[in-house]
Length: 119
Length: 113
Image (tube, rainbow over all chains, first blue to last red; front, side, top):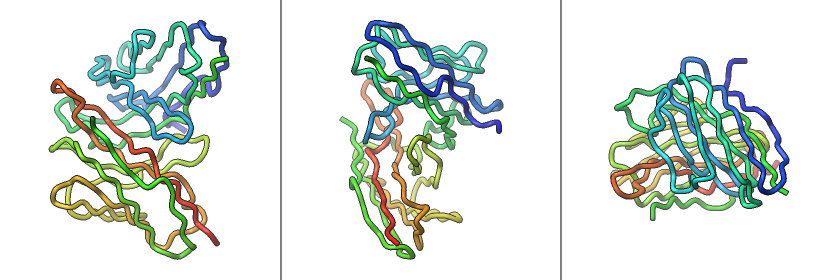
């Protein structure tokens, strides 16, 4: 299966620790997105990349959050000094889109997510 | 503040048509409306997408009025396997020339035998 994969699937950490999640998109996809989803809510947009460039960041993405996509392939999302409010499912998606293309036009393919629990 | 609104939940009997409406009051003028389906412990999965008027594919139809401030997902003859949460996704203005992808809060559809 060559879909979007996320690692790890589950992460339990203590408050104040740093955590890093990885996302491997579908290989030919040039766009990659990160979302956060809490129980009973829709996914909340965090950021997206076009190749290796980070083009949009939500105001939800505080200074403790950083995302990278070196070489335009896989991406990592790091959360520093985790807080209990960071507990959520972190979803990654990828799509194929042109730089000037509409943001929502291209179908996004989602991974199964990384569930973070901060104790 | 950009906002999308969907009913929290809906119940339907098997074989009926289900219509779920999403209101999006600050949608970007040149972007698309997309609907996704999500099962527990899985990421969302694409159902259908449109820009205006009506779009139909093998699983659903999407109705978008001329002002594009709402959209309605129509699922014909639902089955038990359609029990899931359904989300609309639009691009909204987030201020200062910036745009962001905005999901609705989701509609939990329960199909009853």
